[in-house]
Amino acid sequence: MKLEPGDMLLALARDLSEARTTLNAGMEDLAGRLEFLEGAEYGDAIAGLRKVLGDLAVAVQELQAEPEEEEESEGPGTAPNWVDLDKEQCQELWDWLLTWCGKILLPVYAEDVWRPCWFRHQQLKIQLTWLCAYWHWAYEKTAPPTRAAEWHTRWWPAVRKVMQEELKECGYVSESLRDPVHSIPQHGDDALAYEDFADPGLMDLVAKDVARRPDPEKKTSKP
Image 1 (cartoon, helix red, strand yellow):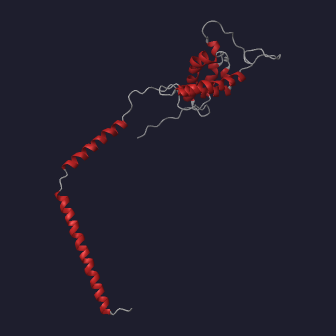
Image 2 (tube, helix red, strand yellow):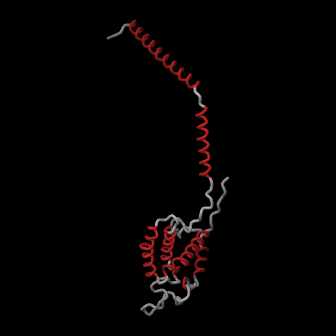
Image 3 (cartoon, one colour):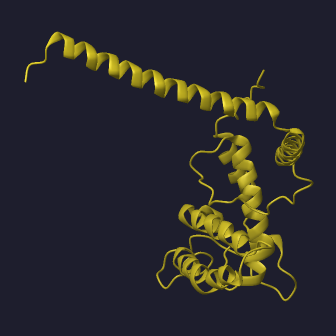
């Protein structure tokens, strides 16, 4: 139905009146809220907020503080990779592996399969590297006994087979007429000697391996 101009004006006036009433009510409600807030006491709330902020600041400082004399790990957290090493890293890795093999692996586990030429066998060296890393991981102070159990029942037997295969002709006259790959001294009744651990070429091989590596990158200090 088409509205007359007069009717349209009346409807518009009615809508404006209702809008003004709603706006006035909203303003009154807002004024009441502001008055309540202005009269409220925030002393206790502010004091509590300051205490919380202070506790947070202390917690942040404790997190940022350096740990007190943490014990150095006896080995790397992951199996080292011989491929990407600089001179310092290579020397450190050799020292770490040789120490473990000489003090732990050979006298405790591997005397019956060990040969002083072991370091000349590239794949064996790689196998012993991750076995060493696994051994240190298994004997961390917080490690569960299942790690050591797995090392003894799974990983060491696997590498032992590799050693037997790699070194089966080293130091012994084979059934064929050809000479042995390497010669080794006989084991005596005394404690293991250095000759039992490695032949005289070990240190020379290590030095050459370190020398062929790139120099360490210089660390630049941040401004």
